[in-house]
Image (cartoon, rainbow, N blue to C red):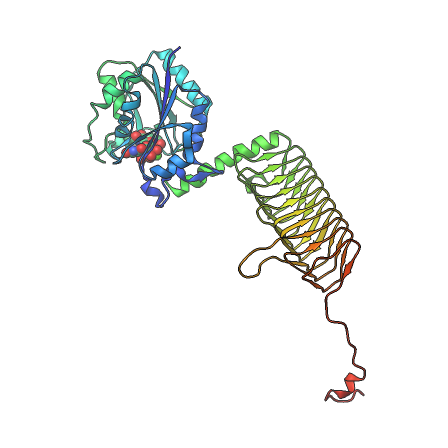
Length: 459
Ligand code: UD1
Ligand code: CA
């Protein structure tokens, strides 16, 4: 079997993005662009993948980790120079090398596979993946002779009027015979409009040597979209979002308005879950079956069970078990664990707390740094006072306890099982089993007070 290598070009700055962040790290539906490229490349199981890094090298390495080898291009002298930086790792190898750009996040493994098959079939030394663009501006153009044979690739900035009119473009993906590639790269010069060493020149060089050079034209131009600008980033996001959402619908998820629903690529959703417009699901969020998520909800790295109802609420790095519900307008901050059948109503905030099964917290409460058992009733406006200005403290409330409205639970404090806290109490000491704590000023009614006030007598 023929050895396969992949080179991913990811050293460029991406000047046109006008960003501090290296271009290939800009995310599309939850993953950096270059991660999408690597993920698709991995599906072909190459013997080695080398990613060429330069701008933002450390950040790109952090993003991709051990999944690829790296070559460093210190000065960005062009895509040809970038590939040449992998010579130490790949120069001696025999086999087929596929080169892809880190800024074409929509290309799929299936297309890479088709390119590879075509390349083998043609017995070519180089095959370029091309597409027909309605507007080819910015892309390299594929120049073919009168017989339709590929002659060379001309960059936009170096193109004559006639060449610029060509609509068949270079997608930036190629298959090469590895030895032919490196031999040709040494012949690439930089006498062009950008003063760069173009990888695209390898095609013309091999052709002039009499080698077989071919082009595989893919049907769907949108898949080859190269992201050089923020506008293209938005376009790529829209297309990938559509793919992701189509997959969820195929799997039995109802998206009321898919065009207005933002779901990251790694999110998982069970069948018969309904998601309204204006919902954002990010990161590694997992949602079970039969859930209902309404407009304005935003979930990041959330774990949601089955039959959970989320109404216009925000959930971060937290979990909700089966049959629980939340909202409208509530917020689960990181490390909150909501048990089965829990009800969290309007305007509540939970942070780093556990709420046991069947516990209810209907309105306007804050629970932070606390462990709550099962079947607890948290009245309206209860505050877990967890911060003393220096440190956070933890409180616990046992099963079947009742916390009256507007109570303050001043941490650290323990309320046992089957205990009561009277409404309006400020609790600073533990409450034991079956006790009722009341900690508030006693009500005093002053008789005939009205008469003491200076006001006009009523008629
Ligand atoms: C490139 C192609 C163009 C093609 C287009 C497809 C060249 C000369 N041109 O143009 O024919 O139509 O892609 O999207 O290759 N890079 C480096 N080091 C460098 C320069 C670039 O690693 O010194 C990397 C970039 O990070 C990027 C890729 O190579 O991932 C392509 O570079 P870019 O500047 O985006 O090339 P385009 O102008 O888009
Ligand atoms: Ca590009």
